[in-house]
Image (cartoon, rainbow, N blue to C red):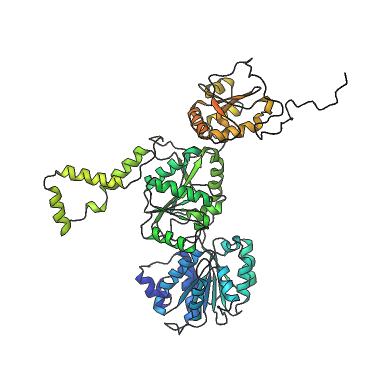
Length: 591
């Protein structure tokens, strides 16, 4: 199947855009387009779904005509879950139908509804919008579906996830039964199948998603670092890849604000994208990324679906996704339309297990490493400078005249050195403190020799290894202390996770824990002691004070006098009585 078998007007538009070979979903939809049946299509993100359903509905809308008649009531409606996706679909359909005289109108939240109302009153052939805004226009009488011939539900699974079921059902029930319904979804979940059975007639099922086969155009990487090293590690990842356009995903709006400010302070050109921004601000942010005024977009998961940025080659998960679907949808912003892309997960030591589970659930192959070192980044900068096309372009006109003036009285080395300084001045400085040669950290299967070799403390210390091996693993450990002891009912059960959190260490890196009256001392493995001390000093823990202990405690060491009765540093009010001394509350004998 080729584009020559599509509508002639659309084939001309595709040829002008240098579309030569259809994708798998486009071929499948073209093959079924002439039948006029409803379609239930599952297709991978970035597979060209918009062009696919644009081609599929052309025979229904145009018939044998080359151009549309004067615009009146809409002939087709495209419903998308997010504003960004709706506006992207609007742009795609506008150029795809440009030779047909189609009038395509976009209706989304966050924009002036009165402007959209005036546009709809002027007539439309195709309307694209989000469910809430389309329902609002329908209830106000601005949309009349009596002439509707086709409706497309794009990213139907996402619309149900976002709670648009009621709006979708309202729209579908106000449309004529004779319309054609095309439903596109990344997966055909039971909810999608139920929606299809209710609102589609004799639908043809098209499945172009290859199960259990990862996206071949996306390379997955995981970068391990300490929790306090996230910003520096992220800076080095961005500098090492040096993508023309990148997206960094955060879990919260506050995280987006903070990270964007920090990256801008370091010299990166970046914009923010989150649900708290107005639609105008979101449009400006995306346009800055498209035209090169910004190279990094820091975003929440509002950008995980529907965004198609042609030059986007890097996706970074600054905060780990909450599930496999979000991981795949975030990563799907790159590796689109046959282009290659990289998806990088930033993994603190304490979240490695969770990252491994996400990667395993997503069914992707992932290379593990430490953050790129500053020396490696500077070496990459030199390679990029030497291969920059600007050095191979021939100087002509005023450029040649200025070049000769620069060489008058200056050596070629001086001019080249000035060029190097100018090139380096625009680059943000990489973060120091990471290994110059990242070690391979690919997880091995559990219970294997490689897995035990990669996690010596886990196996040697906490899984019944001989005493000699346990002592060797903690040889040269660092001893630390915290100001909570028996009188505050200190218990390793709640001390252990607190120590892991404050010091950014794993349980395997914590040795003996000894509780005294007023304090608790514990040992940290030798290779983690420096990291623990650095993170401990930066901690903002309110109730406890951590400090380095001079030496391991002796067997008979006393910890000083007890604190005042009734005092508990965790809340400053009530004492814990479980497992510790409590005030005497019984009756006292007289005399």
